Image (cartoon, rainbow, N blue to C red; front, top):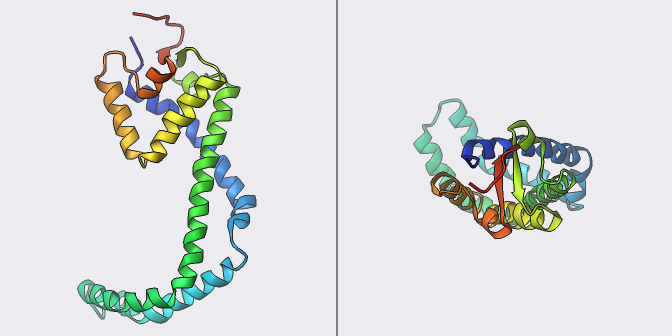
Length: 198
């Protein structure tokens, strides 16, 4: 019997949590400031000052129940184009920083997950805890193709949702419970100590 959906998801979550913690700590203590442009702090302060200048009154009125939500939204929609014009330069700097943060997290996760998988030879902590393992040809190249290109890379390209849905459908409804990455790399996920084929 091949491994089902929930064990596979569970093992990935167990493996992903420490990686997110590592990325967060690295970001907080080292990388966060490196990703900022030289003028980021100034632009952020200017952006916030402009936001207060344009929206401060209506936000205060709404918070004090002086205007309804509908009135707030109408005034916000009237003011917003002027605010966007005034804050265009600041917004561009903030947006670039946000893109850098997203890229750091995506590529950092992929790199750490791949190195971790290769170091553990596919027998990651999540798989060990849930008593499953990879079968078939498991080496650095197949792990790269399987874990980086077909799992994480494909999920990034499909904005996670498309890739996860396809994986869920293939694992849930196919007889062999194989995803595209399993088929391409000729690997499969099995219970520990169970030999295939059957």
